Image (cartoon, rainbow, N blue to C red; front, side):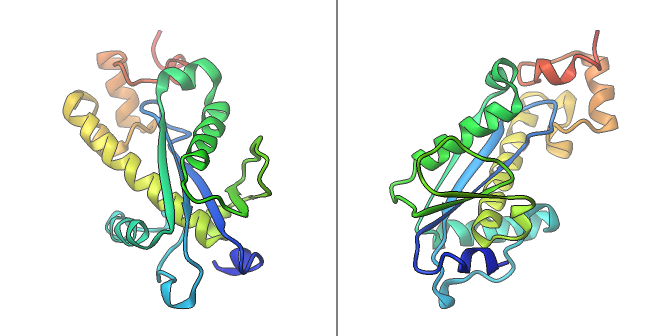
Length: 195
């Protein structure tokens, strides 16, 4: 997990990742984080957020925020996703997250996306399973988005967003067909499910 990051030993490394590219509802959330690489500050258990339990992600989220040299989390809403498409919305969110940092990194490690930025960057396929900084960003993005969808579930209880987080599960698609869309559904993602 540290191999990629240690290639840039002595440099300030920012990791960027997103959560929520695939769901039918809600924003895409992008996080950018700069973790200290001193041996005594490495957080044990950091991994691709998809490989961790919700309880473990929540624990690590708090540790990452308390340990990070700098971090930022950005949401890009469903209207923007519909307008510019999910890939461009993800890139926009990643750039905004990077530009929101107070500390300027020397190198940016990104999970499988290349950004139009002037800073040196490395886009790593499955980066959230290979880079400590990207994995840290993936946990921040995932926990933030899951919390957001749980809150939105209170506003739109009929869709049960707290359970599926807006992803296209069988239950979500059935609710969509039954109740129609709500304000946070992505029009471009739900066309095939509702006429």
